[in-house]
Length: 223
Image (cartoon, rainbow, N blue to C red; front, side, top):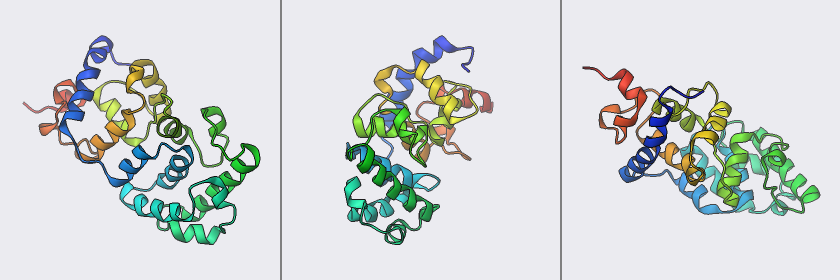
């Protein structure tokens, strides 16, 4: 999974992360909100809303949802249509409303209203995959975990840190590669970088603050 320049990659990780941080790219409101929650349930249900939906749409929908409730117990008496209307127009909003209400019920009935703090338990909930579970651990509990979304997957491969085909492969590769001190923040760092600069279709390589450490830039550089 790793490239041939493994040792060089390890030496450059600190410089890459420092360079991205110093560039001070603006965070979207949804990213800021998730950073400041420190609440496993809020992180969980807002992350479910964000799946297959951009942050600009997810943010106001999350605020409307949180006006209805902030704890699993609060959602026990909310009907599906009310929640669905609150979170519209996130993608698959009707399914997500049903998922959130079901998760809330299970948390109250089986977990004493508390979100479990392990990936193994979290992924048992419908609609919760490893990406969401890792984000809950990192942002909700402060437990070192690597949340890999499309930005983290894309940028990690572009930098040459990994050579993987799926986000799940990237997660496990980064677990072996990244120093644990970066696990909690790597998602926020690379998501913000990806939203502002290292975009899917048109990465702005010429003005990139970490281009000298990037395999993608070296491979695609024009003489």
